[in-house]
Image 1 (cartoon, rainbow, N blue to C red):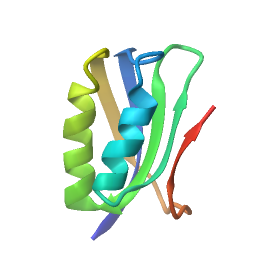
Image 2: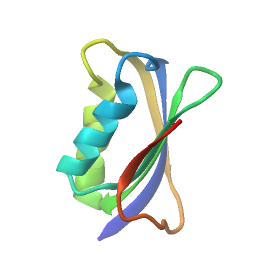
Image 3: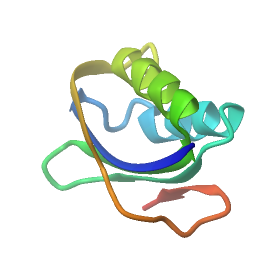
Length: 90
């Protein structure tokens, strides 16, 4: 079963390769969506894929790339999602 979620990642997650890391991990898990830096220093991610892969993706995001320091990963299920790739939004 597929699932769409909105994720907010806080901590040291900007200027450390977090969006690129998210894209790489999402593509390996066949997840589409987007990652975008927010003004408050967090990263907002929209993701759509198989529920099992979304759960793996969230677990991976909690660790993040080596230069990051993830404080929290908050998420909630959203209705529908239209995308056929994973994009980094500037």
